[in-house]
Image 1 (tube, rainbow, N blue to C red):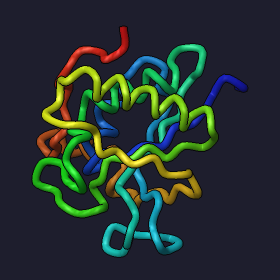
Image 2 (image 1 turned 180 degrees about the vertical axis):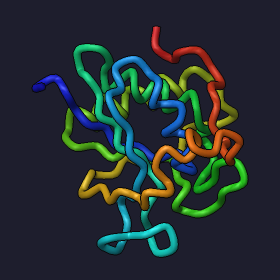
Image 3 (image 1 turned 45 degrees about the vertical axis):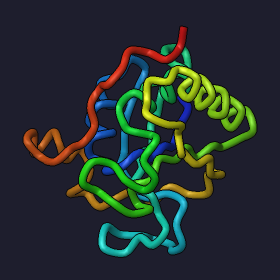
Length: 164
């Protein structure tokens, strides 16, 4: 299917983000993993510089990169540097891993909308990082909150859409 695309984002612990995105309209599949770090084949115990992120496969006839980013900014706090909930460190940074200049420009536009909304106490510190490679996390991290429904998450819907 030529209408299938991928998006790569990070916004804290990957379990909660995956759980919320998996049921979004247009999302075909989710996978948690590591992005933007220093080593090949990172693991949960060894991923220096990597963010805990998710790979979203989506049907571009049913959703858009912009709508994915809108939801992303509604389910995590993009104003806290290297921190989400109880998790602290660069692994938990807010980041968008763009694959081309179009995605980068869309991300910049959405960040501007989010900042201008004044819904958060401060501006987004979300980094825009060029996508290089996605490393899937270990099987025990995939679909974690499906298997452990009361497991840890700091992600939840905080606002209605930023898009008008």
